[in-house]
Image (tube, rainbow, N blue to C red; front, side, top):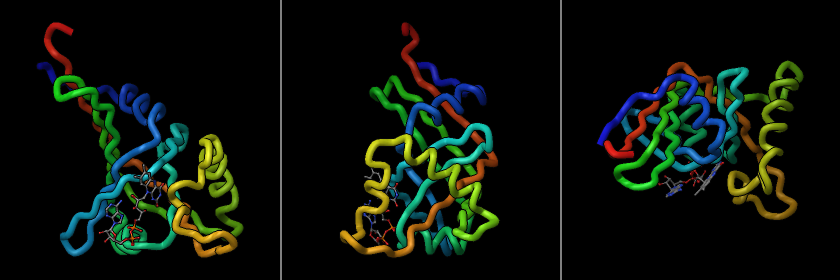
Length: 150
Ligand SMILES: Cc1cc2nc3c(=O)[nH]c(=O)nc-3n(C[C@H](O)[C@H](O)[C@H](O)COP(=O)(O)OP(=O)(O)OC[C@H]3O[C@@H](n4cnc5c(N)ncnc54)[C@H](O)[C@@H]3O)c2cc1C
């Protein structure tokens, strides 16, 4: 099997064609990983996602250093994985952030039933706080594996 590093362009292509990743955050030396849906904004080099308030939001507010793993796994011999390492930044509701929030929402709306499952905990008619955030990417790495004969 050959494993090689992806170029930056190959990494961004993987982020473009996927919307499911594993978000890793940490607090007091304890890691925490959950699957989330994301949207990649290549122009601004960031990922958008949203959530209701819970453990990961609490932890990322305390420690904004996060990473997101995205994978395309055929089998153990054929796979591509990309790691985006970056910083959690909340996109607030205030007027200064109106453009950023509307841009993130445009990305979300490109997905069918875009509010699921991030806002699935909400009951009909309930309007609790939904946090929209970006992960500003500082470092992107990727690897791909294939059998020698492929
Ligand atoms: C395909 C898919 C897409 C998803 N997309 C999103 C998304 O876009 N946005 C989003 O916010 N959430 C998404 N989720 C749900 C997400 O994985 C979390 O379950 C959810 O966000 C709650 O996380 P929390 O930190 O707020 O946990 P809390 O609700 O605060 O839960 C507390 C505890 O529950 C446990 N827990 C939480 N989530 C999980 C889990 N998934 N598996 C096992 N144990 C868990 C943990 O031990 C944690 O300590 C998605 C899940 C899947 C499978």
